[in-house]
Length: 153
Image (cartoon, rainbow, N blue to C red; front, side, top):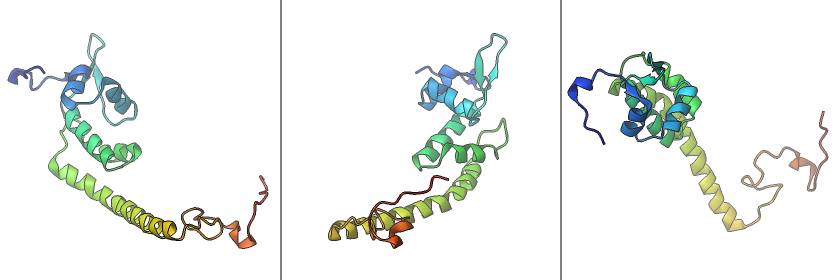
C-alpha cells in the first residue's frame, strides 16, 4: 500500500486508488457509479477521477449492504447528501435511522418465521391447506384439497 503524501490530500483519486483504499474491486466501483451511488469526472487525459469523499460514501454503501438495505434504497439516501462533502457522523445517524424501522420489521418477520418453523417441525404436516409456512397466501385452500386450473386471463 502506498504511503499518502499530505500534499496529495486535496487531489482526486483514480479508480485504482479508490479500489485500494476502500477495499472493493474496480468492477464494484464501476457498478456503484453506474447505479448512481457514486460519481466521478474525466480528466483531460480521459481518466476517471473520484473526489476523496467517495471513500466515505463507499463505506456507507458497504455497511448498509451488510444490513440488507437494497441498493436502490441506498442510492435514494445518498442523493440526500450534498455533493462534494464527505458524509459526516450526523449524516450517517440520519440515514441509519431511516433504515432502522425497515430492519426492525424484517427482524420481526424473521422471528415469526423462525417460531413458526419450530412448530412446523414439531407437527411435521407441511399441509398445503393449513401450513402457514408451506403455503401462507393460499386463497384457494377454502375450495378443498387438490390442484386448480386457474384462468390465465
